[in-house]
Picture 1 (tube, rainbow, N blue to C red):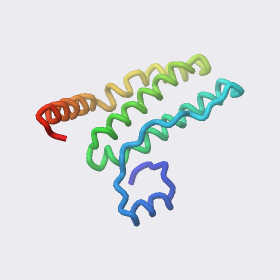
Picture 2 (picture 1 turned 180 degrees about the vertical axis):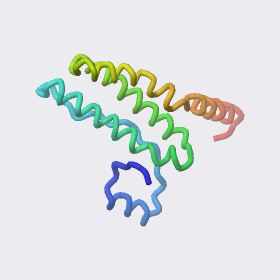
Picture 3 (picture 1 turned 90 degrees about the vertical axis):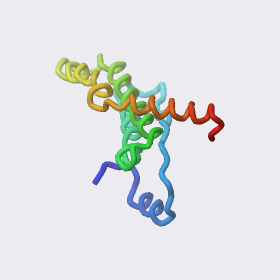
Length: 130
């Protein structure tokens, strides 16, 4: 059981087609100059959460390095947006946002895996591998 932003029909078609899942890159948040700050934050935060959740299945299933990287990118984007919009939140909420500073570093200490994967790929390509 895992979180997903894919609909039942999307998951069913993927299973029927035996589609191999790939890491999902961030898509632009749907924001405009006419939006109020709170609406802009909501759009950006949902974009970040969607980006994160779309990569969870691959990270959980096999630790896919690119999915793991995109997962971490989504966390950094979310932390940055929380920091940017922090003045919109009341005192207790601002304190909670401050507690999230360690979200990417302590809750998901997986940066070393990505760096090792990149080093391996670089060495493999330098030796004539694809």
